[in-house]
Length: 325
Ligand code: CUA
Image 1 (cartoon, rainbow, N blue to C red):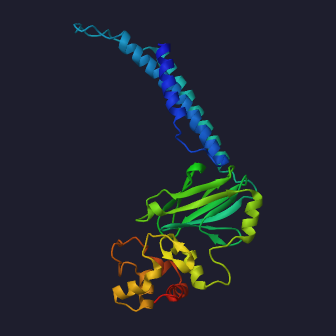
Image 2 (image 1 turned 45 degrees about the horizontal axis):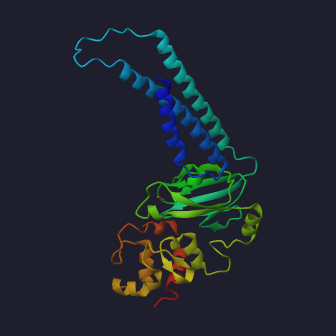
């Protein structure tokens, strides 16, 4: 029986250890979650080995002969056995609960002076606003610093996920949800939306860039924000609403091909049979009014008419038609 247990433990442990199920953690919080993961996994492997050993042993040892059709002996329970198989799982499950509770408490501790970043999800892009009020489309973080993310959404429910950070948190309209991360490994990591939020869901990605404190300080001082002061106000609106997440527009350095290219606005307006400026405005506030061939209705969010103030829509329209035609 012990031999069967050892073999099944070894096979299951090899599958658990040698297949990389989780990416290497890049935050202290992720490291603690990985600890809980392995704590629960080793306990599970032990239980698996015991159950497999007893099961296989009983199947072999108590198998009836082919011609034996008699009833088995009546069994009325075994008090000692029941105490053992209740007590041991109780201790193991309680241990997992305590360890998890401690880790959850530690992971929600942001320290006295966390770096506070506001994260806004919208179809289909992320925005990160820093304490100085500047907004970026990717998230820069100093290594070994507590960071408190306050998440919300402009339209539907999104969910913030960086696989190497091991935590997920929903971004819900009208609500602020918080998550603490303390990056401890320098590198670039994908920020992924992990809540189905519309046709562009799979493209709703950004980057978390973890840098040394010195690099971060330099970036923070000199960083090119999404809305540069003194630039074209239309460009600021373009960047603040992440138009570049889906469209090509040379003037803004945008190269994404989810939606129609904004460099071809004049040709599209001609196809739609509208004056250029009217066409640009309608395409922002009522994107399903005219659809370029091969593009689906509903891909472009239809609520920009309410989420972008009308003076900013004017600036955006002027900016888009400036070089067209
Ligand atoms: Cu946002 Cu999926």
